Length: 417
Image 1 (spheres, rainbow, N blue to C red):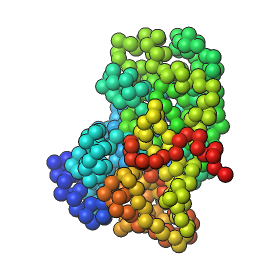
Image 2: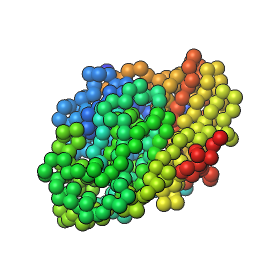
Image 3: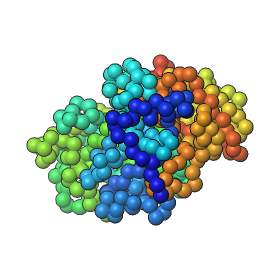
Image 4: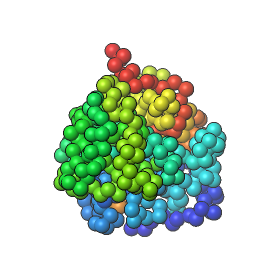
């Protein structure tokens, strides 16, 4: 299979300008596949069965697809561009990261580009056969100790990609109220004794299709086996707190990989990276669980736009996401206040001049027609979405920080009648 020619960074501007002009501010993105050596693929990413170990068995199976990503995957032994999304245009390709560097004001807006100098978030599907080890993502302050950025994240479980539960459709989150830091410290001290017992201090919640969760930095969580759409900050930091999962050893290095080297065996420091108040929240579900909320101002006849990721982290709107459903024969003008990364999860149709088609099976390295980056310029002007198929056309899109003037708060779904 012939891959599009890679455009070097110095030559991106001309091709990018042609692509933006040809498709009215829309950029076609190629699939971005990411393996994880410590996990087992859930095989719902629509990747061809022969391709889940396309990076080699030593790298682990592909269990993630990243969307509109300008963030590198922090994998040991990774490829130089692993995790980065590519724009495709007329037999050529270049990274979205390079595109933003060339035309950040047009692609993501002068305010966002001026503040971050990059597209600072990304989203992914992660798809595992079983649970992920109980882990946390560092806060901005703790990640800065190793020159990284922290990572809040959110979950949504799209029904279209969750035809089966796989092995454990539950997620452990936080710690049981009353848990002490000494108990967690002892779990770390017991790392080499097999199961270190960290899950005995936590609580599992059953995962429900079509709902989601908001996970602040510093909060322990062991995601379950539903395929998850995950908007998040543009970082890949984490620390694994569970030593054994489904009989597989989790190396100590995955606990401390994003901590200062001199602190790699300082148990008090490691436990201190947890946000204790959030972890032992007595109303954890009330404060972190969300359900879709219809945006009446963006919905109409045959068109429903729902908030699926909303709320704030420490009072800050770090990112958000919506799910657009266009019924057969319907169309709409999609107008947003900021750029977004779009992935089609059901049906077929068009977005502006670009075709939208949900694939049934994808070969590794193959181009698809399901993913688009909607630039800020295009989003503000409005993009025509048309359903040309016989089933609903459904797309998920996520936004960067501080895009929306008004956004629902966590818990607002309980106010719906």
